[in-house]
Image (tube, rainbow, N blue to C red; front, side):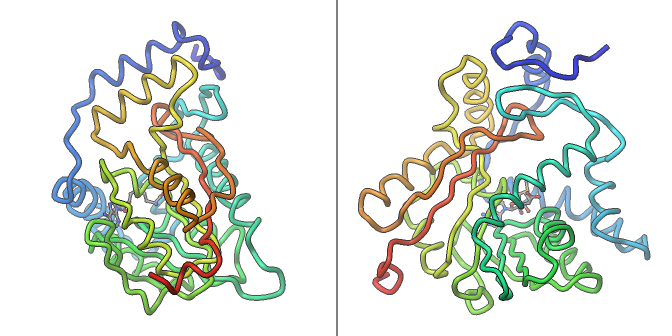
Amino acid sequence: MKKSKISIKKINDLVFLFKDLKKKTFFRKNKFNVLREFDEEKYSSITDHVKKNKKFSIKLLDDFVLKFKKSKYYFYKDNIFFGKILKIHKKNLKIHASHIKKFIIPSTKNNIVELGAGYGSKIINLKKEYFKVHNVHAFDFSKNSLKILNFLKKKIKINVGYCDFYSLKINKKIVPKNSIIFTSYALHYIPNHKEKIIDFFINLEPRIVIFFEPFYENYKGKKYFSYCRNYIKQNNYNKNLLKILKNYQKKQKIKIVRIEKNVFGINPLLPYSVVVWKVEKGKTKSL
Ligand SMILES: C[S@@+](CC[C@H](N)C(=O)[O-])C[C@H]1O[C@@H](n2cnc3c(N)ncnc32)[C@H](O)[C@@H]1O
């Protein structure tokens, strides 16, 4: 019988997680491989699924991708839990919503933007469940993800556009100024970010930026996190994003408003931290 909760301090009870890790085959991350993983593999099968099924919705897509009825281990605040995927997915959305809510200005239509939105699992569900009256915008660099988002536009009001963190290109005209901009598991595919990545966000003149991303620099303090660090290394995921943010804070270009370390991970070896930051006053125009 699987235990429903194990503290990450009990490393010996978690060996099974690390064994699974050894079985996986990893590929190095670069634009070609990341596009192959998402555009050609994951999202093209979802596009086929959408085409075949006249009755599609974000719920059906999520179920197709995530397999709601199955159960798995996940990370939440220094514990590993076992639970149904549907419940894990809802809990994750609730965490995203609770952070975004803090920056919503009441009694007006706010703009919420997700960059690297995939097929819209976060942004569309957030709109449906938490931010019905607000405008939402989804951007990605995978053509197939944009295709799916454009299909979903028939069901739910959402603006869709192209953005690429490699070339730092985006349909800037369709990103409203003063938006709440967030990313979720999208920035870690670039092993070493350049400082320009932060300028890219600053240029969009956001009200606030929220990164729900795995931060290598936050994987410290407990032995468990050395396995997370190894996971990042094996996958060639990002290792310097927090350092860059802190440098920009030192240069007084941005202000880091909040860092919540290692909050949640559907993949227990890749929990995300929530890092919230804003542009220092008067810095937007000088870029
Ligand atoms: C793991 S999925 C996360 C999707 C969504 N944010 C979520 O949390 O459900 C990663 C997404 O980031 C996108 N992505 C990866 N590298 C990117 C880049 N350089 N520019 C834009 N999007 C990127 C992928 O196409 C994919 O849709």
